[in-house]
Image (cartoon, rainbow, N blue to C red; front, side, top):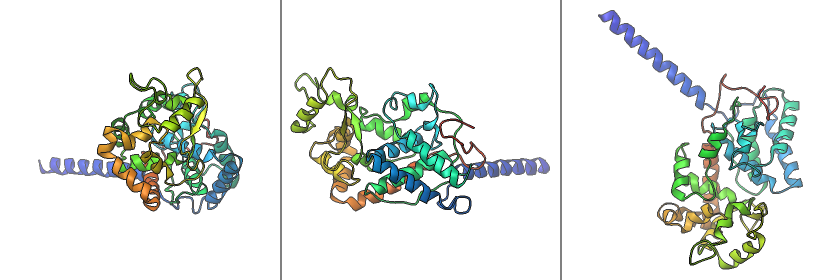
Length: 329
């Protein structure tokens, strides 16, 4: 009897040890992961991102968005980069919307020339997102690294997991919570909309036949509404793009939050952080705080980016280091 109990205890201890080891492998990232294997990776990525932004300032927002859309589906595993009709690129939130794949290809080529088959595409996305923010005037942070690339894309996951511009604040909160992010992360990461543009398709519902008593959303500044109605006529295909932050289109700052206070948020989900009933109850106070204190916003944004970058990474021997970010090896 005693030997059975001892054997059972050993089995349980062994199982717990394996579980702890697996959990540690899954979550372990390090800011100096490539210190020996690819010490110049940060310099190489920064140079490629800088070149891309010189050609098109909007690319900063595109690179930031790629990292976001990658991490919310299957975790931060580079799966958003995979080609194929069943890939995440062709999910509804991404189709004709996510961009910057050619820039990622250029970065990957440059990194491969520096240190072959060493740096993952998932890590490249994380570094490029940080550099895009910094080069646009935003905060810097040390990027935890050591992610490996996933072997499959998840189009269904992209369709269901990604927050959409027409979602309610509660729905967005729930989608963030599902990947371990909280209210502060919702508001801080929404502040990434201080750069970039959005297609008319994403906000046209605010401009035309909004309600039986109002053609435009009453939480949208009337002058801005008139300008957007001219930009996005009803018979348009919705592909025309408008700046998310009209105050400082390509500068990473806290003007996005000041815009919300003045009913000049572009997307329904943006203005909802301040004006909707759900927003008033949960996110309005943070919007006001960030509008007054750019330093607070920068600090929280950097922390939230680190948290987001740690969503279910593949590490250790799981996954692979892709040679080409568009296809598995």
